Image (cartoon, rainbow, N blue to C red):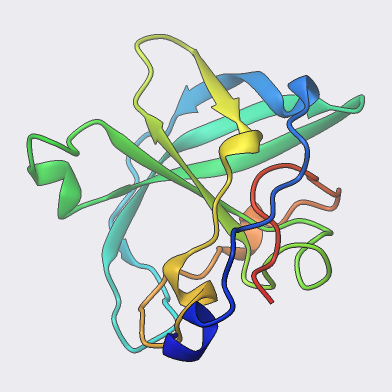
Length: 153
């Protein structure tokens, strides 16, 4: 927002840690139907659950769904783009209450590299006028992922 720009210096990030760069098992979803993903506004973009990723952090097996934006998948630039929204125990305390996002590309095999150090806030963390997908409940992790960008305010 305009008032934020007067004092804004930089975003704050967690220190980069190698444990948050994971090689996850990727399982492509079968027979999924497109659905309208809830957003922070009345906009309802169509997504499809593209698959699941499972990985271990601090000895805990974690699982998340990855999604593909139906409209973007019809463009050359984003035809292999995957969307990984997640929330964790830092949300609302150290990181944005609405969760964070990671951008991925469709893997060629059954593994996918995920760098949680690259997790970023949705645009609506900075300005309520943006329409941001809401993290699906199944992508709420019951652990703290202290990686990526921290809360803005």
